Image 1 (tube, rainbow, N blue to C red):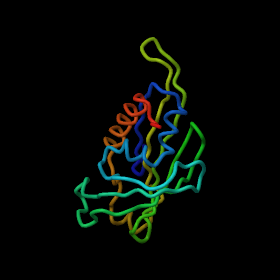
Image 2 (cartoon, rainbow, N blue to C red; image 1 turned 180 degrees about the vertical axis):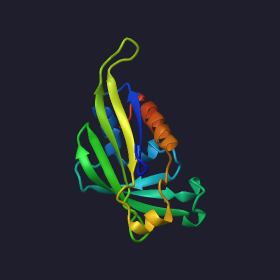
Image 3 (tube, rainbow, N blue to C red; image 1 turned 90 degrees about the horizontal axis):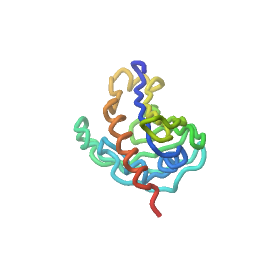
Length: 166
């Protein structure tokens, strides 16, 4: 980690394909969000870099900018390596765009005496290339390392229960 990037890793007792399927589904993002900002979404599961979907947000959940209230953002996939890596940028209503990147890296995790085989999932949030106006305003990080950890816990529980649902 650096002063412009947060990461959190968790071992999840599920195949990478199951985790990745959830991360490709806009509803999966809403289902695992620990911040409370992601309220709903519109769009189909993504399948390649450049694909996008809309997330309906509510900034009141963070309590930092109550005047923002409810708004929509467009999530555009930046990196897409099936069962290995997915990252995205956010296009919102602020100008210039902030330019931060969120994503997940997935790595195989062998079975141990205590745990079955699964996936080592790293959630990351990077604001190293944000617009100078936002860097000077000191708005990042928007979410904390604790929020990344919380989302990984919800991801673990959600995948183990059999997401995605038919």
